[in-house]
Length: 92
Picture 1 (cartoon, rainbow, N blue to C red):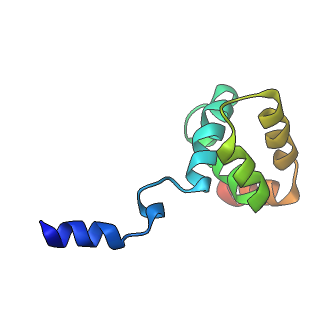
Picture 2: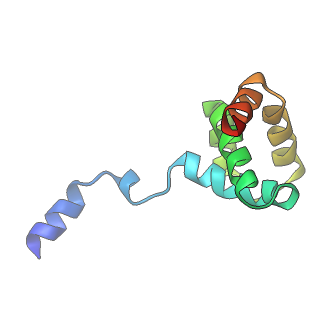
């Protein structure tokens, strides 16, 4: 038991918490699935998260929930060439 406690104490705190990317995905996915349900929504969400900057990921991860500001950020990311390239690659 002492070994387990020691091993857990040595793990970084991040091992127990969701990453910012996971929190951002958890926010964006349900919003996207309202307009694009199923696997297509999952793919679109992955492309959005992949095209987002580190600051955008942090903002999405910190958001309390869906909002007009979050929707506007998602729309800004959606129209980027990187997002479109990701979607084309996923379709191809």
